[in-house]
Length: 282
Image (cartoon, rainbow, N blue to C red; front, side):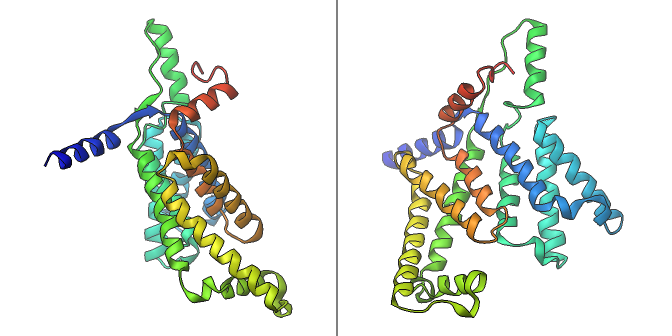
């Protein structure tokens, strides 16, 4: 019983911990830009078919613009989350617009929903600037750039789950033998002229096992700070390679952006303060 209580207490401290809101703000800004990159062209008003889509388009751009600059941030981020969830589930899944329901759409949509659960407007935002101006006017201390970290913990869980199930999905003979990678190389690069032979088989099988091992390591390692110094740069390199080699759209950028949820918030805060010496006062 004592052990269970101590585990429960540790879980409560983990879930209720507070820290810098700077990484939340950076994720908010990045997500707003990625939402424009992924859905912006589809949501321009000229593309709207009917009053409902027109309203959704207006809501999309209004919410994401306010989210980007941090104006009425909690409401704006929540509105953006509701809009993209409507786009994914109602228009995409239920409405048959399958171009909106790929895995990179889901990762981006769910990350936006999780961002809405964070106090992401307490840093790097117009809301922060207004709060500082109010504090100066009233002669009181500036509000701290701190808040609950639960939203970042949930983003870490999202990252871990994506890597875990991606690795599990690849644990079959077709992928581990390298055959699937050879098919991808043939489809995107070589066509029917794919150079066959033992060397290609060895290279593709080695690459396949390396990818699976890295994804399993990332699924575990995002929870282990001691692994971050080595593992996260490998993850960035992996996603950069995917972005350059394959049409993964916003998936790589979204995954790398979510690494900010994994890194110690105080370390992110110090890095931003070093790059922007007046970040705490602006």
